Image 1 (cartoon, helix red, strand yellow):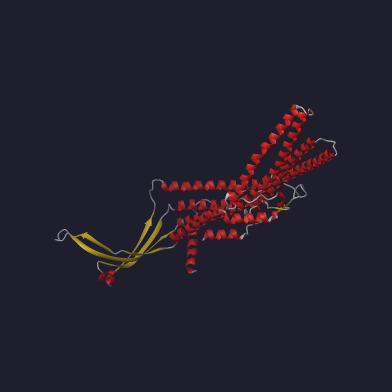
Image 2 (cartoon, rainbow, N blue to C red):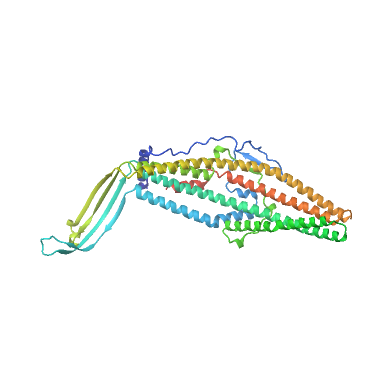
Length: 489
């Protein structure tokens, strides 16, 4: 405890002397407004499919937001991905290695180095030329405790340590961002798989109806009740409908394979697609104000840590151009025989100091300072881009949700009308007032409308997930605090 207090005090004293070096550590101020988009969305989104989503303004984001879909199967898949994803496990191991590298660098730069050196030697050495014996065989016994310490008057080492600590913190936040992206990708893949499965089912029914209508038209042509053009047009429609099914199936399998990899499984172990009806559309979506978003999204916090790290690196490069003082001391025993080594006459010691002022390094030190200054400017620009890109992702999600509701309302209207038309055609066919091909045509129309309706429902679910993810995570999350503490150790 006392050594840690001494280390903290030394660090604070050193930082007090190095505050003048380097560019500002705080990220640049990004002006914000009350709205994300050009026009502010209404708190109540348009109603569609019996659900009117509500935007909860200034509400805190939801940590495990995927549970808002009220699907135990989806929750299980997200938990499985977070536990078994190889990419996430590799990122966690890399972060652990970075933290150990930080501890190693701090240990080498902020506390004295103490080593125990033992060097017994047996050697033949040259003698004095006037003596008859030109060489001598001798034994040398030396054992010493050596200590050295470099005083960081201008904070070069402290700034370098702090820069590395910020880089570790940046990696921790990027890991958090990766974890959230993994959960989002699992949700998106699940929604896409459900949508594609619904489309495959609808298109399969469409192909069946088209093929049957083509056969009916061919039979009518042979019976003389339909023209050749009608027969060929029916064949074209059937072939076009059948041609859309293989790529749709391939797309479904590709999404399922990607979903399996996200879960840490082999592609042949991909889970079965969930029905779209099993995914409940969240009724309420939290929307934080832009100024709060800066403190919630891991990618923005990581970009902020990168700015601070780059500023400290630039400061360390500047501080390294000033003098440094190194002290060294050693104490031990030595001798040419064991009796001398163990007697009081064998005591040896030494103390020394070295003051170093860089004078000429071929411009290397100035170039290094210019390099880190340029890195800092790049980190500032990247921070600005990250912030405005985050604002854009929220704005896009809000606009998409509003338009998704309108699109779904129209596709649902078309699907319901097509379904009613199909039912009317079937009733009239049973009464003998319309031929079978009219029923088949109405069924094709309904299946086409069902495909569009499935896509619209999936888009609404996916854009809700995009908004959840864009909001980030509450700043009081223990995980964030733990990352910061671990990165600063």
